[in-house]
Length: 357
Image (cartoon, rainbow, N blue to C red):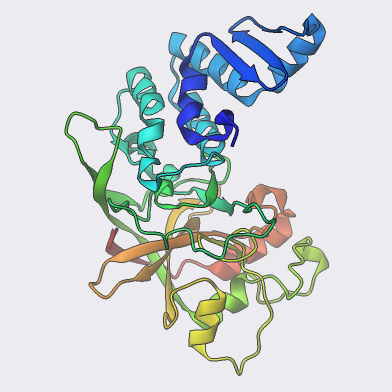
């Protein structure tokens, strides 16, 4: 396994001012201004290689922001880092946060903020809107192991992307909606294993918030958020999907998290839940609205949750009302289609206080 494909080396490469890489066919030297190799790589080729290097671009962006930190730019850069980092490999799953701790510490120096298992307190509402894309395994097939199925020594709350084992993470803060004023974060905390290492291992966490919630039964979830049997995600205005309301991306669903499948009314709800990647026997999904589209006044994106036996909730995915599966940014939809979907989604939310673990 190449060293640069491992999560542990990501922060070493990103934070190092000079890197000497040993390859099977030679050596490569990299610093902030150039890349050189012992096979006399031409300056133009080196420039192209440097420009195409994600770590080089990210390192330069981090250095520029260190000179003049800006909250919005730092948030975008953070999620770029998380997306790159989550593509790496880990041998010990408990190392997920530990192998990113040095980068998190650097961000904390640039913008003093409470670090919450890969999220930040000052932007927590939009940070919760991360989504997943599952990795392929070596035989070319997606792993049948659910992303939260493999146990770790220390529990991580489901609202943190670091609770997932086999997923690439993405988030585009500010590109979907704006935070809903009806969301009130009451408590959000994690419990570091070591008090002297706030950016490292945690032993659980909790999120308590008051927010708009609506509940849908499994049949309605399937009816309003599934693609067809062949996974056709074409423009909504060109397809006859009168009951379709938007897009739902589940953390443990097939086809990289998107709901795909055909079904019949005769199928029981337990089977539908299993086919959706939800716990078998689950017959209700709570849609917790976190953000709005422009000035609509209606929450059009948020978390999909299921209730546990103890009355607390776990995250199972994220929803976007008024967006197709492939175009998860609602402003890419034709205005009339998007508005129609949002109108049918409606504002029959009820403000509830929920504890998410």
